[in-house]
Image 1: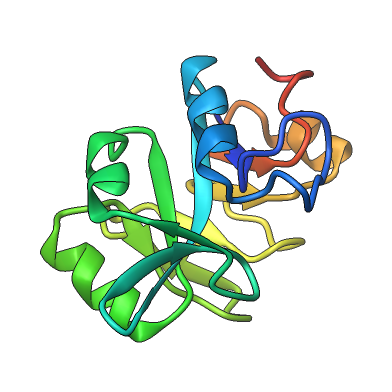
Image 2: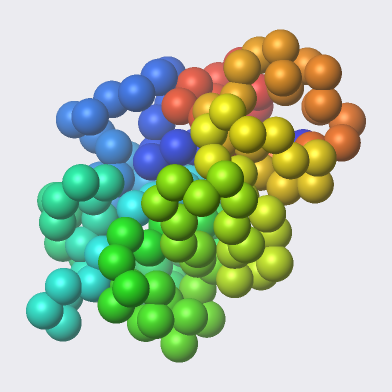
Length: 144
């Protein structure tokens, strides 16, 4: 089971550091993959869940592409990330979606035996630990 840091969080949600390049690099240096929120607006790349919060270059995504799960927050980001060969996906409230690598990404509180559980309860993790592909959580410390 792989562990993915939700927006670069380590010890629970932290809006001050979520989706910030230095925080993402910190988690990657711990050899943990990271789910990030990516936008492409007016020919510029941004990280941020609700807004264009942190401007980045495409090179940031490319240099870290083996460790990133890029959640496209608009269609322009999705199109360009697919063109660049980045691991990405798009969904809003769909229960399930496929990443560009063909991995099932589940909406929070939805179970998938073969994919990524997002923000699952400890009970769900314990129950399905042997069959799930991975989890995406804010508190990675207890799993790494």
